[in-house]
Image (cartoon, rainbow, N blue to C red):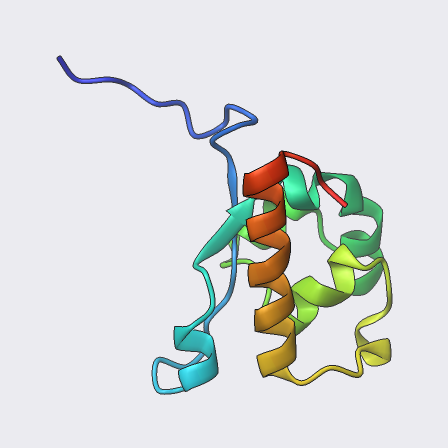
Length: 105
């Protein structure tokens, strides 16, 4: 029996992480997406930084790890002081926290 999973269900919905280079080792270590629940409450910052909704950004391929870090921390992209590698590590850590605890922080 085939199960029809609704990707719009809040638990299953995902936000894409843009990987603009297949040859970048840092990006190869980055997840392809984060759970939608992790970014949903940051819609205002996404609009401020990119002048687009989360839905539109996701449809266009998502955000780079650095852009995603900025949105998830409710800061302007220019304020990010971490390297791309550090942003990827932070995203992975936050995803692990979210999966283990179900808490979004």
